[in-house]
Amino acid sequence: MAAPSFAFRYLVPVAVAFVAIGAFAADETGQPAPRFHAKTTTGDQFNNASVKGKVVLFEFWTTWCKYCENEASLVDDIAKEFADKGLIVLAVDVLEPDQKVKKYLAEHPRSVPIVLTKDTNLSAMYNAQSYPIYVIIDRDGNIAGEQRGAAGERGLRRLLSRAGIEAKPEAEE
Image 1 (cartoon, rainbow, N blue to C red):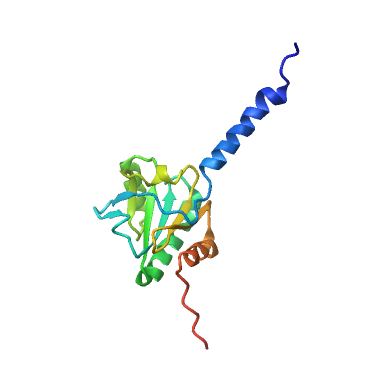
Image 2 (image 1 turned 30 degrees about the vertical axis):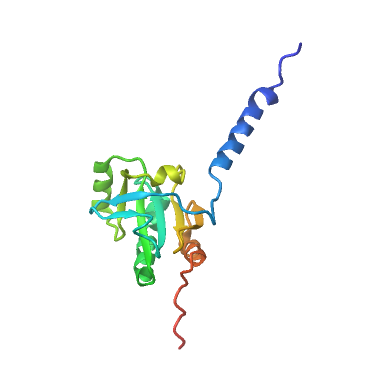
């Protein structure tokens, strides 16, 4: 009997693994957001009940991610711009020691609430393994959209739009 071919022996298992990972990380747009809890570095508590009727943007990031660093001020600006429309932004640092994150934030301050991995179950629920990841929850508590990888301003505004938050029209001159 001939030995299994290289393709069957090595490539098929790799292909099956990629399909399985893709299915696990599938877009859940339109589905109810999983039950979550989060405590910010300032002690504020958030969960599904406390954000009911609000739009929530989860930003999953790390200190070593240059894309995260580049988009941090954009996320902070969008949080300020839409706070009066009911937007809550939670920046969730993923799997890094508290002291490392605190040192990073001292050098790169943020205006949005920061959540550390030990204080939430969010990163596991949204399979946060590449960064940044943005997940938007609408006022009804459903996942309105997600973006894996850098979004830029247009991408973030598109996510907000999916959750029912539109930019103010520009003033006519």
